[in-house]
Amino acid sequence: MDITIPQTLEQWNGAGQDYLPGHLGMSFIKVEPDEVIATMAVRKALAAWNGFLHAGAVVSLADSCCGYGTIRSLPDGASGFTTVELKSNFLGTARQGAIVCTARPLHQGRTTQVWDASVTPEGGTKPIAHFRCTQMILWPK
Image (cartoon, rainbow, N blue to C red; front, side):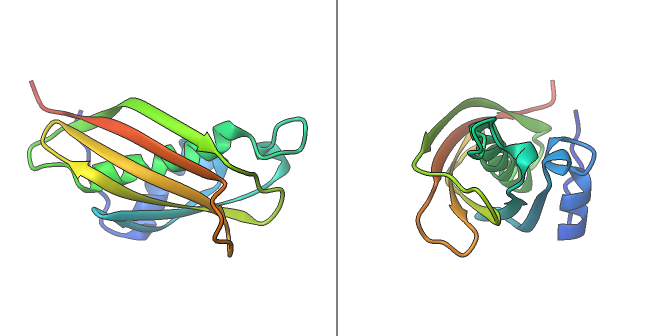
């Protein structure tokens, strides 16, 4: 699998439009090797039946940010990546507005990358979730 790395925010947002990021309504506002930021509007379709934002929606936003960052910072010659581990801690929720995810790398090596992400309500400072994932870098055979 060869990945064409988008060069503009419009291309980054377009790349995920027909996939989970597009279906969930994610909007990427920064995609750089050292930081990825995206937002997602809170709406009923992303909630659990009890009215709270579904943990899966929050994890999907954080995982997508870390994945976009991994793609953006792939080593020369790499053909892609796959997630090998992820962990989430939930500290709160959001019932309206939007949530914002900021992801930053802890490690960017030839065989793995480790990313941390924090999710907060838009305009807020108190995180509703912390996320960490490990990505395995794939190489052509």
